[in-house]
Amino acid sequence: MTSGYQQYRDSAGTDALPTVTDPDKTYAAITRQDYLDYKENYGGFEDDLIDRAQNDTSLIDSARADSANAAGLMSGISDRNASRYGAALNPAQMQQRGRSLERANTLGGVQSINDARVAQREANTKQLSDLINIGQGVNRSSLSQMGSAAADATQRNNAFSQAKAASKANTYSTLGSLGSMAIMAFAF
Amino acid sequence: MGSGPKQTDYEASAAEKTSASVAMAEHKYFKEKYDPLLQKMRDASLQDKATDTLRGRANADTMQQLTKPSAQRAIRGADGGDMAQAYQAQLGIANTSGKNIQNTAQTNVLGTARGQAADAQTGMAKASRLATSEALTRAKNKQAVSQAKMSAAGQVAGSFLAQGMANKATTGTAHPEMPAGQKGPGAPVTKKGSFMSPVDEFGNKVSGFGNRLAASNFFGGT
Image 1 (cartoon, rainbow over the protein chains, first blue to last red):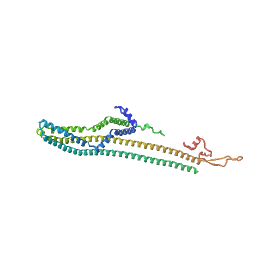
Image 2 (spheres, rainbow over the protein chains, first blue to last red):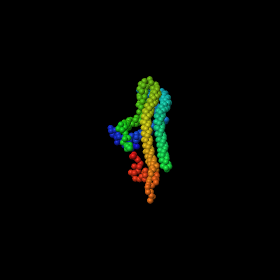
Image 3 (cartoon, each protein chain N blue to C red):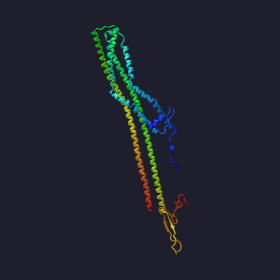
């Protein structure tokens, strides 16, 4: 099935219309190949999304890293500004400024990480909801497909039973007519 | 009696063939042009470019707003603390916005890809339905042929029996010769046909194809 499809895809020109000799088989080949393509191109992507929607901590990790970076960055900026204006701080002032910077940075970090936790939960929940919605669609589609296959199978079985019954009836009818003719023949 | 159905009578029309060809060509076009686009979007959604851009902007905004030179603030040493809090808050907002953009892009890609897969499944269901109706038609045809054979056998057997009965029902009057030394016609004897051979009006067995055909009155008679 796949080989016929691949043969077409390899052989068909870009402008010429391809010749489809057996639309039924081609249809089956295309749909099968589409599904295999999906599994190959998006199967891992989907698994990764589902996993990350439940376990992602990237926002919190970034907030932690930013908090650590901010301390050094702001300390440098503060030092350069003080130097620019020629501020000569005594040790007590420097200590106080350091404490002030550290306190502000810690508070900022705590708030930032807490905000990140909330944002992370929201983002993960939304992502999971979206994925569940997609999954619902997948489930609906597959159930519908299975229902269709089941209906087809039932139809086939019913048709087979009816055919068997009709065939038996036909056989008995023929035998009956033969028998009655025989009886009439030997009655003479 | 006409000849049987010909396969050529059941071939697809030109419109059906063209429709199938165009559908195949469009599918090929989609696979070549649009499918790679979705894969590109998938790859792009895995890279966190939106977050990088937003963080850059957040950083620039923070610095532009809060690094205006101020001798008083520089000497007091208070600018660093305010800036640290603002910087982290802005980057946090940028991270959150970037994450939302990335997540939305990824679910969009997955939703579209899943939609394609769903279309493929629906197509497969349709294909199996076509195959089902084809199998049913084939079974019906086989059954019809089988019934026709049985009916034909029944008809032949019935005709055979009916003809046999008709043969047995035939009677003829024979006038045998008188025994030696006696004159005149003999006493008439009624003779009955057997199952396989009828008798004519004189009680003689009808034999031979031509005579049997004439006796059967198949082509009508006088």
